[in-house]
Image (cartoon, rainbow, N blue to C red; front, side, top):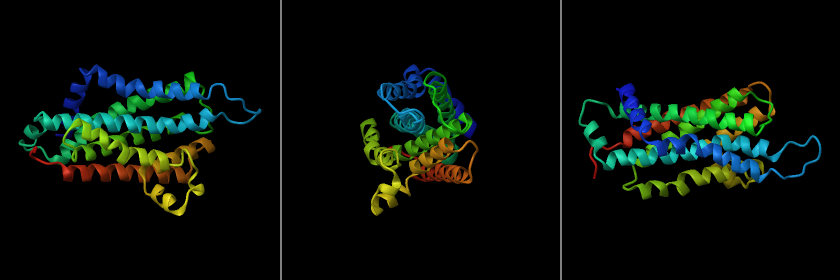
Length: 247
């Protein structure tokens, strides 16, 4: 049931050229904008470029944001069109349905992360100590996290506009508090505590470990395991909130 659902969603995406462009092309274009933003900075010899730090974090943040939007709107469209309700009248389990959607979008997320990471390394010469493979791994997990949160939030929206309104509630606080703009140790105790409970924070911590160490560290695997657990937990929660009838 899960594989059949994933195959159906991928078949629909194959004919939706705009969504494919949004998933695969937009993160790379945004990464290019970040690169040219810092292109003319003047640094002393031996000082790492700002792009090497910020661009690395964007490899996780951009897929997270894009997959959240695409997934939440697509799932809501399935509900409002009646497709989801018809599917739920069959013997398919809600968990099979949700994990099928997650699998389909996760495959697209993997392609998205590969494209964005290839652009960062081959075109913009991203220079960090860690392996590109580890960067891709974190980027994929982060994109899947966006998929899971998008599926969860779509259950509480009635229109596509309402789905987009979850952006400032679910996505923006994570971007502000993940440690990208201000180091967590420089935040006050309240914001630091909130930051420690947000999934995107673990992603940024993992990428910082990759940037600073040539080999995978224990802290990296711990952050990765936490992110994976959050993804599974959010998907299970989304299956519990999925309604069999559309209001």
